[in-house]
Length: 351
Image (tube, rainbow, N blue to C red; front, top):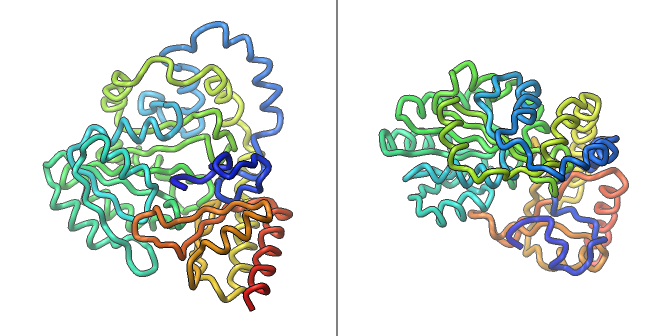
């Protein structure tokens, strides 16, 4: 299992998929009807410059559209952005595609292990950033991070970014789950205050707006760099439906507030209940998923849950993790309780 959401490998599209971190509320109400009303747009090519999409993102992010590029999901942007560098620092555990893309692009990787609690080793990161001074380098960090849901403290963010500016190293923040984090800062606002110098932020509509099949990602950066990267992109990489959806989803403030509140409530509930089992280490999360460490191999639990129509994410393909780790998504209360009930059944079977 390289990624979550691979229900087809397990032969049943009706599985309760706790391996996939998608908003359990589903896409915004009314979006289906709105997209149907825009259906005739498929008869023509999208605007090759995506002016309306960028304008919608500009209003959502409260920055100039000149600092925004959009792509076919965050993955297209991650690949294009890191391809510019000869060297990249990757703190782990992290999204497996960082290493996969860097390998494909033949970029020198400096892999930084975490502290014992899986948080960032800030001192080592700062040291490695300075080592890359003037060497066409970058560092990519998930914020919140996949798979452990760790989010960067503001003081650490400013320390890392300051070191990047001093060393001419670019800080790339992968923020596919940022809306869930409810942090006391906004990285886009922070980046704008620094004139986007040596900082690039990547986000997506995939997770938060429950639209993984639509493939809509976006990134903010200095306007000059945005133009350079856009000129390298394939034309019309964003389809008409994703382009149209931007006129709806980014304006739905009620959905955004409800999603954040719902996720907070269910995440806290799950963390509290999981801690009662005593057989997991439960990592605190600022996202819509939770990392667990078991006492023994995850395989028997995985197979037990799969037999009961529930799929979880095995984590041994994340660097630094082994077969004791699993990741579960935050779902609706009925599904969360279903998972907890099955975990109780599994524990009782073992005892």
